Image (tube, rainbow, N blue to C red):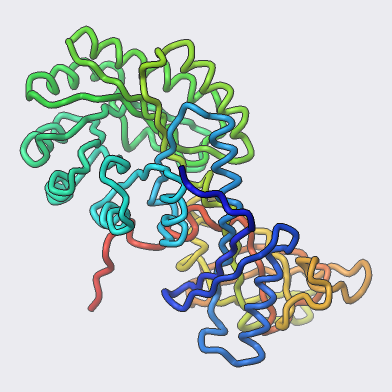
Length: 418
């Protein structure tokens, strides 16, 4: 079993690898104390990188989410989706909690193997893989992988013949932040054909999987997907195949998790025996709420008379935008609600996330933009503060550990440089 911290361990992670600073906080000390310390240090010492945005990572929150998972889905083994957030500190901590890992690329598999995680704890959960990645997985003995089409089976037979296969069936939550049904998943009328080909090729079917979409919120989508997975199990048994794993994918949102978990438990208990191993691929559930992002205001534009009279808010320009850690504003239609911090932190009111109110009842409205010259680099169309925000102040964004921290990177692949 992994360890559980007695203290909330918070890590300030610079946007660029190193430096990283470590802070141990008691449960009563708020995370914003760490932000204040980082900001104040940068201001007073004119630290290199003082203008860079940075993350505060609360591993205590990751631990709390893990405990919630074990409480609500005690018989479902989590395989953390590395594509969600591949921060090495987070991955190392999750490894200590004995989670598995869902990898979707060669680079992601390398990252997890380099942590010393055994290949048995890794699932290559990409239904459409390159031939080189199949060769890598075979050599690394990462044998469990997904498929959903005939061509993939041919590639697996040629390059990863010892694969332990999970058939990915179609599933879709239309209300999900990012639905996945259009891209992946075998429809029910193709299930028997694919399973028969698995048998004909002499490959090893070990299970069935699905994924309803990122940020799913409709319990009925999970219920239907589990019923469809049961159909695939029955078809497999009729063909003499013996799958023993059900992978219920990811898409879990913290706000609806308990309701989702109840529906999932009920359907699984009704449709599957206790001999079936149940796994899942949570990503955002573990990472999103654990990360807070601090961005510095690098410039400001106050509207002149006509624009001000028209109610157009003043403009703040910060050092991070949609081409950095805010791509989720576009991809996921995320609505950001930042809070303001003075350039020397929120002292003396350490317990308050906001700067002190300057005029009681005053509201200051701004649109917030990233640092690029692209006119689409808008982070917030209108944000309201109870204090004026100046150049050099900081804007604090909570719940930034999901796709936001990884979606701007090349999906676990190495960047090509000129």
